[in-house]
Image (cartoon, rainbow, N blue to C red):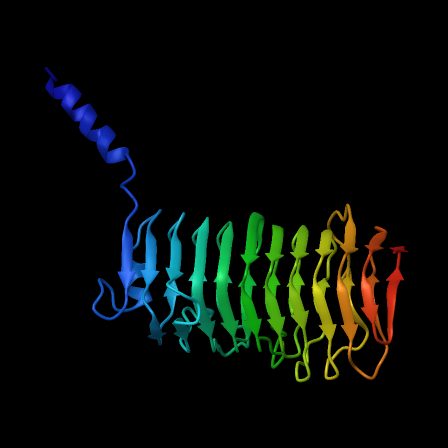
Length: 308
């Protein structure tokens, strides 16, 4: 038999337990018509599923351990509207997963509109298309946080109308890792700009194409550990910056840089100009190994070694 005091204690314990994760459905005829409505109702640990369609909406995802996903990236489109003057999706929550969506045409007055503005700790992006935004992904400082991008596409992002915006631009993170993703026709900014303490780009396709006007393919302006491996890279005829494909340390090295490894990549310099594959302005020797370079290209400027 439970005495009243024990009943009270049991009730308090049950109230303290987390509620089970829910699935919130978004779309015509669903529980929520717009992603922003689901964002207002979601709780930590929930899963938000967005039905195919075009949503002229934006959302702020404050919850932790949240998953936001469409059925397929090409069929579920979030477009045109930005929240907080920042992005289509603003994500202050931590341990958030976003997958199977298209995020397109983010514009804000300061020129830094993003498909995703990442503000929490730890974000996983899978099978997301970022098309024609000022930034694809823009991330705030989270020195202990990680952003991982997999199997995603970045097309015609970037601008330098006021301050430069890019395909991906992250500030201080523990790790930025990009896997099996494609970057095409970035405009004036860089395809990838990373101030992370460790930057890893693996098995990606990063290219200007005939019309892209990007500056660097990869810019790591403050140093930090770098791994760029098994990528297909191309600098095009209309690239705004002819000096380099990959730049490391151009804005001053202010963090430990234990290693710089650039290996197994294919790089085509398609412009009628000479360029450098890797410019290393840190004191850490860059190790270039088994890269295939085509065009008017010098492998390395700065400290390091080029190995076949």
